[in-house]
Length: 57
Image (tube, one colour):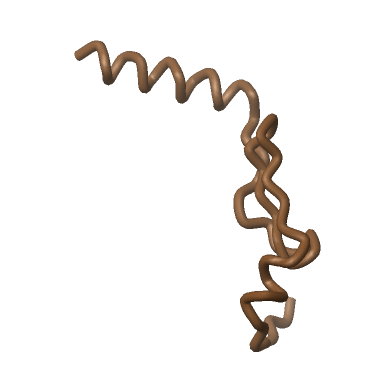
């Protein structure tokens, strides 16, 4: 895979950005940039359980 350095404007980066509340996925740059991938629902449940245990201490 060849990586190319490109300069882009912030305006172009945020254009077409989308935050999916159900999956937690965030994309930008017209869907070309995956800022935060979708979180597996099993992982979400594990994180909630872990955070509950931390707050119980």
